[in-house]
Amino acid sequence: MNTNQRQRYQQVILSHARKPQHKGKTNLIHRQNQGENSFCGDKVDLTLMLDETETIIEDIKFEGAGCALCLASADLMAGAVKGKNASEALLMVEDFRKMVIGETEFQAPLEKLNIMQSVAKFPMRVKCVTLAWHTLKGALAGEEKI
Ligand code: ZN
Image (cartoon, rainbow, N blue to C red; front, side, top):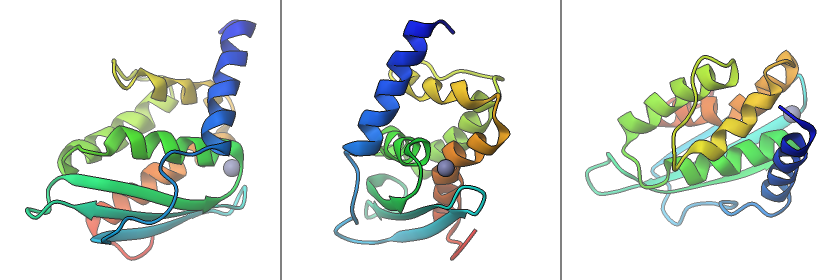
């Protein structure tokens, strides 16, 4: 990754962290889960609204506190899985985990998620960017807490 690319990624991360597009709570709450990353102090509180068949994620929002990486990743995650069905979203959780450690990459229109690969060198930061995804997995599994 060159310097320009790194700066551009940095900007994308900061803009999602400062002006998240999916912050708040869904109107109806069909699934909910809280995740915490004690290494960094990140917290994510996810709410999901499903369709009547309980398969499609109609809406997903998060509230959270933490570092820019964690919040940006939560916002990107919400944008990526909104409108997807639950099983597809669970596959994306797995893909995201593999992408962060460099084993795979997301294709268009989800290629924006690949910017999180830039933290792979820092194991502590990996926890920041995967928190929202782990929390999503727990929410879809119907777990109270992860
Ligand atoms: Zn963090």
